[in-house]
Picture (cartoon, rainbow over the protein chains, first blue to last red):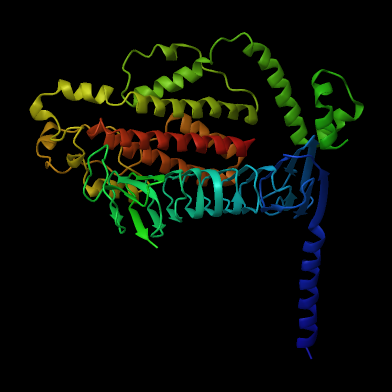
Length: 282
Length: 264
């Protein structure tokens, strides 16, 4: 007999807690009409930002605020939309969290910033700039634009980025690039690892650099690239047959390799200070 | 009045056009109060900037200190005789110093990159042949430092202190296909520079919960810089190493910049 009331009490308490949490959380939606080549910025201290393509003349922002200790400020100037979380007194990483889901014109320029993240952008064709201290950054299915990413220790993953101008810089975050091609693809991480899986396109400059982090590149047999790899104090390993070419600097056995595959359409430079470098056939 | 109203009316407010609800809102909203204070500060400082032909002395002092610490310049410290920039009153204003410091970091890295081999080679040339390292900078095949050096620096967040006072004997006994033996050094972190200390102090005030994270990252970046500097000491002609050093400096500048963004 005693267990029934106890269960009831616990259930009621739990329901009360959940209801309180649900009441504290609020969802807001903002809609903006924009012209061509819109510029959208979303900046939040704490919380996720997810951006997908919507209609060509509208920006729709859905924001989930975790408490009343944070507000969302919006500003529209022409086709420039600025969205920012505004922490009020007493806000912390939980109560100050705002999660955004944003629909923007596919060709819009996008700037995202969140300390905690995650940050994601997909199926866009404009220029993208993403910055997050610890944020996990994920960009996929984008094309024809600049993709600039900066993190302190957040990992960065780019997938299916075509004809892009890609610049990634992280202090200690890992960088993963899958099917990423473009005129310039540049990734730099201090202690993070860099992983590239793709064919290095046809005619781009690829520079992957770490200090202590390892670099691994996996390429298909039909890739067309001119490879240079050099680790100052780490080891390099090449598992694919490279045609020799004139080397501007002497080969250091076990520390560097040079050579081409296919017609050497793209230039690929893999550099590390003490991290290992490995080039592998898919 | 809401924050958005304040932002809309800012131009008028800065120009001194009063709004009755404005002061009440400023008392209730620290963010807007800080924003207005900053804009007023910018407005007043901008008048001074118009009279300035060059960056404040602090910028040059920072660059000079950085280059001096790298041993790239040795002239008497004349630049430091100038007055240091007085930090502004508020925390947010005080964080502005990070911008020139970050620029100075990159400038120092760029200087090292472009003025490669100038100073170290001169030093080597002044040494008797027998006391020089057994390797030459233009021979990459004999310039690899021992793996233990890199592994040590890689694995330890605290790295060896920077400038080694390497004995001539240790250079002579270096193996021809290995880097010169490095001196025995304590595995201790050197004390942070004044800029780093101030940087961390700003982070402590602006984002106290992130202090440990930024400190770790700063320590890691500094370790990379010192490790590369150590390498360059023995391979002064290695442009690739200098490029790595430049990149390490850029990462440090990026860390400063990200912290600045966060603090603001």
